Structure formats: C-alpha cells, structure tokens
Length: 223
Length: 206
Image 1: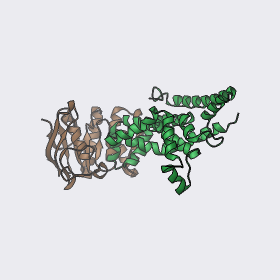
Image 2 (image 1 turned 45 degrees about the vertical axis):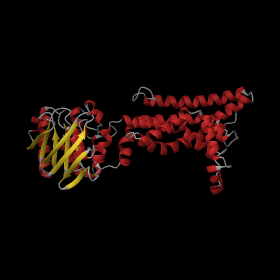
Image 3 (image 1 turned 120 degrees about the vertical axis):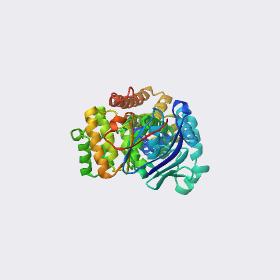
Image 4 (image 1 turned 135 degrees about the vertical axis):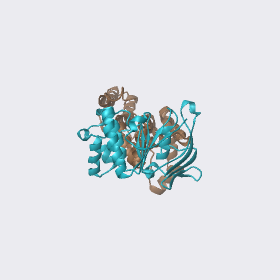
C-alpha cells in the first residue's frame, strides 16, 4: 500500500488544525460576545459548511481560484500562486470547511462561562486579550481539546471539497479519502479496505483519546 | 465625593423595572447599601465599576467623570480600576489562591499581608474548587484588594462567613480601609454584619 495519501492527509489535517487554532479561537471569542446583526451574519456563514454539500463549496472555491478568471487569475499573475490542484488550495478549502468544528465548540464553551469571570479580570485592569489568554481559554480546556481533535479528524475525512479543488494528483493532492475512492473506482477493494481501515483506526484513536481525557469534565466530548 | 445620578432598565422580572438612583457618597469612608431583592443594588455597583451601562445619567468619582451618558463619556472598567467583589465570587477555576493574587499584583509583601488578613496562608496553593464557601468569599475580597483600588465595590461580601470569622475579617478590613483611606460601597442584606464599619447607610428601591 502506498502510504503517501495517508501522510498527505495527516499533513493537511495538521496544517489546517494549526491555522484554525490561530484564526478560529479569536473568531470564536468574538462570536461569543453579545449578539449583533454582524455576528449573526458571521455565525450563519460559519455554519454554512456544516450543511452545504461539500461539492458545492468545492465548486465555488474552484471558480474563485481558477487561474482563468477573477481572484485566481490575479493571484496567479501578481504572486504566481495557483491554489487550484495544489496543496495550498487543499489547505484553504480545509480551513473554510473545518472552521465550524473549531469555532463552534469554543464559542459555546466561552458563552457558558459566567460573565463575571471576564468582568473580574477587567476590574483588575486586565485587557480583553490578557483575559482571554489567562482566564477564559484555560477554563475551557476540554472544549479546546474537543475542537482541536474534531477539526483534525474532520479534515482527515474530507472528500468532496478536496476532490473538487485538489483533484487526484498523486503526492500532491491525493489524500487518503480520495485514494479510497480511486481504489474503488479501479475495483481494487483490498487497497480501498486498507486505506479505509487506516483512516478508521486513526479517527477512532483520536476520539477515544478525547473521550478519556474529558470523561470527568463533561458527559461526552461533543457537549 | 462620589456623585451618582442614573437610570437603567433592569433585566429582571420581565424587564419592566427601572433602577433610578441619585445620591452622593463621601470618599475615604464606607457606605452601606441596603434594599429589597431586585431593587438593583448589584446593578448599581456594576454601573459604577463600568460593567453595566445605564440609559441615562452620570457617575463622577472624586471630581473625575467616569460616565456621562449624554456626552458619551464611559471609562472602561480597566481605567476605573475599582476593587469589585462579585456576589458569585467570580473566582478563576484555573488559578490557585496565590495565582489569583499574583494575577492582580506583583507586590509580594502586599500579597502576604492580604493572605494574613484573610487567614488563608495555609491554602495559598489550593484552587477554588478545593476551598470552602467562606474561604472562596475571602479570596474574592482580597483579590479585589490586591490592586489597592481607590474604590471598593462589594456585593454581599460576607454572606458565607461564620460569625467568628466574619467578626475578625470585617475588623481587619475596617482597619485596612482606614489605613489606606479607601472608599467602599458595601451591599448587604444583613446590616448587622457591617457593624465593624462606620459610615453612612443608604437604601435603594423603596
């Protein structure tokens, strides 16, 4: 079995999770504050990848980053960057697609903290950033872990959106989920079973780890 | 002098009630605040601290305008730097007693003194979930004091203390307030527990 699709999936999931930890946490914190029209709109957009068919999201990304037109053409001409059928394109699609898995649980956990925790920190003269770093985030560790693992596992399992924007280029964009599809198309069920079992085992181990870590803190890691 | 003249809609009992308060409180002394449940005592303290904003009014502390709804002045809680004791304590579950104080100040001598006043030296490495209700409440008070605030705002700060501890703790705080010339506004349902403090008493919501 060629392990490169599995390694590529793991690399994609790692890069996506790190980027989403950097972008998703501030976004979740912003969303956890008092609801405004702008925040409601942002929440709807954030939730869209959960309900939209991945192929639709992939199609829009394909159109947006096609080097033949619009933004994709501009990126290609000015920065010599091509996102379609490339690893950076997969990362971008994964970040958008997995964003709700990072921001959602973190936002919910922040909203469940008593408002007086942040208020107490403010009265001690601490800024919003200091409060987030020293008071809020340390008190939602189970949710942070859950969000991180869900993001990683969800990115590992992506299929439609990565196929649309990345295609099936060996060593470049052929991730494990695409390799399963490819093997089935070629009637190589044994190879498909190997890739499937590998993905199943990794995902199972990750989720089991979260359940064990969170067992004393929440009823299930999905709460 | 603390001058307050505010109006704020209260989000309790369906949201129809208004908190209207107009009054003056002297600096460098303790003012006891009494009143029925739901009258807006906690909200009044939060407005003074900058944690709640009234629809109308002004808050002036020692000739500095902290809030003026008409002209749009509204200093942040970080700039007002009041020592706020929350009714629910608002302790940080991730921090030990010592870390609570170190988060507020780097003055280790002051931290030692506060731990002594609260009789909590032996518990300095404990997190809030391992403290009794009374210890948690004392921690909430000394955390607020850690920044040496000009103004202490205390919402039911002694309700979880037993009679003897309360007597010792309030006596120690009273001396400290005098020594540091602090101003304190203390909300309490039980005026007798504030006997250690001399000062005015005001009632709101009646």
